[in-house]
Length: 585
Image 1: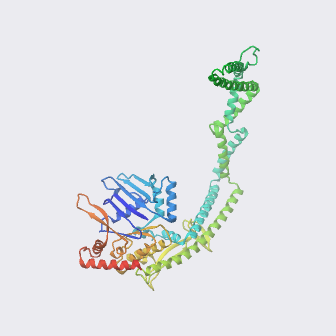
Image 2: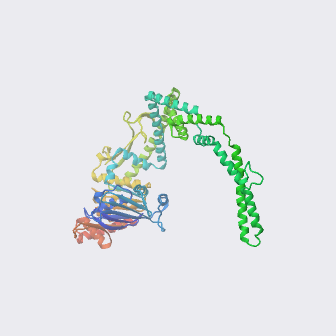
Image 3: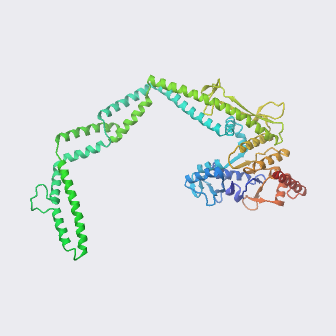
């Protein structure tokens, strides 16, 4: 869960800290006090888009910091991601994260003690927190979002089927596009292929080998300077070992070193230092002997061969001919040939290949259609379960006669998507299959089934969306849920039921609720109030925890705008008592 949230320099908030707890945390305050900035700060902390216009001029930057304490599978996933990125959790298992935004719009992120890309905060946020607000209600009115919501609800096996459908669809479209391109651009492909074949034929005739140009250059230089090399090697050999033409009494390096060593060894008993020098002379003699052998071998292999030199000239000329056209050196020419062969396979427009691609496209189309059919059946099964669970939640939200339906219908053919036969019907198929999903509401018995945006009033829509979010949360998801005024347009008994539902949700999740309803706030495990201070030259806001009498005064303010009213406080205390009994039940 999120243990603490500190916000500095954001909107009307100058510097405040929100101490959060497990269960239900409620945030209240008068309109304009800065409740929205709390949700905005959460969004920034978990990788949301930065708006420099919300940064206070003083100190010129907004900072949001948080401390997470996680457990179970979520902790393993998040800690592993932080470690991979170079950070690390604290010794007690807590994770510290922060986000800074300047008035110029520059943004920085830190996670686990290290600077991180903002996208990493977003990845952690997807695992840790889900924010539900009025904008999310509008988002869920879009058909594509409704289909995505049903897919999330359907479960892990459904998600695997959806991934398989997307992968098969992508393969099918690649083959279809490749086939169409080969047929459409056959002439250009033939011309490019002819040029590549000419180049490959020329390179094949030359048959360059890796590193051959450098090896030939070295050998050519040796043959061109054979006499000078022979003279140098002979003189050196004569100096170290008497040479090929030395007389018997010619002193060489090996002989002189041997004499010096024996002379020192004769006196080594008198001074041990001479023994050490004699040993070093013996090592030098061994090294000189090795050099002598190698010089002999070199001289034996050194031969001026005009015929060989001429063949080297011719071979190097052939290699220069291809390097001038295709690359800077022989290795580059070989790489060009490899690329050319690969490209030729892509340019193939033979009837045999086209027929093969046609058959592959047909096979993949059948696979996509089969997967889309299975996906549709899975969605229909999930739609029934989803509708039943949302309807049950609506009964608890003072809409006992309302019913939600989830319509899963084939997407009409003839639109932008390709058409395939799915379960015996021609439908438009995309990466997510061939279904259109629509949430519908029957507000009361006998009422027509209408899309949510047409069949629900503002208050009803808020309750339907809350019921949907409760059902989503019950099927898993992040451990922390944020509800930003999802109770707008609701009052009376429905407001009490919303508070009850959120409190029930808080038994398995950490819940943060921004609300203007006292009936909802009464169910909180921790009540935070955002208060505005207009005493100075600049308006600021801060957050404080309210308890006992102070909490009753806040609820009285929310009920009637009269925090000091005895009647309002009595009503608030009654609300708190009812909520306390509900939480214990």
